[in-house]
Image (cartoon, rainbow, N blue to C red; front, side):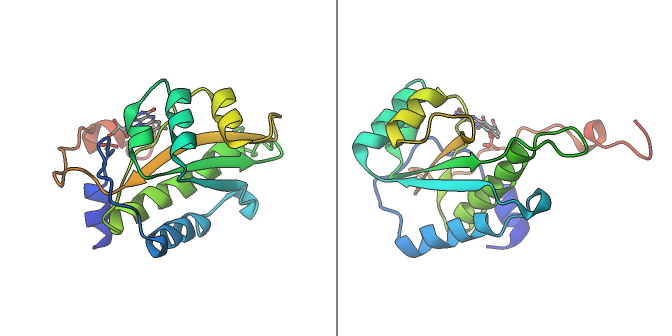
Length: 172
Ligand SMILES: Cc1cc2nc3c(=O)[nH]c(=O)nc-3n(C[C@H](O)[C@H](O)[C@H](O)COP(=O)(O)O)c2cc1C
């Protein structure tokens, strides 16, 4: 799929078919995340691939019962193993770095004909328990990403602000 077509058609998928995701596709998607840029090339991202139905159900519970979390045949749990570093600009590095990697991942999924959905409405403590992630602050779960073949092919209309309202020229 052409690059801008991938960008234009990626959308949040909340209904999945039961068709399993091929291992080669999964590896290509994870590799797309691995190639993301990160501040100081720190690469704090760690990914847990969850296929087990019991663990998927536990993650769905942690995600306040969002059914699409468990419906997908696999969930990529994007974590950060980080040192809490703040960049010179004042922003924490790890959420920015992990978000870029996850964006690579969701776009790669789309290019492979797969659907995905960012999930941040979840209880981190419960999600950590489900996957034996260390409790301390050094490892955080940033987002859960259910991935699978979409149940429907239709691409919904993108609801986005027009460029004129988000882009300024030269100054605020
Ligand atoms: C950081 C982040 C957190 C999100 N959390 C959830 C979530 O918990 N559950 C959900 O169904 N969608 C979630 N979404 C999906 C957004 O609702 C969706 O991206 C947005 O409405 C734009 O729609 P689109 O992805 O179809 O273009 C999240 C998206 C992002 C980027």
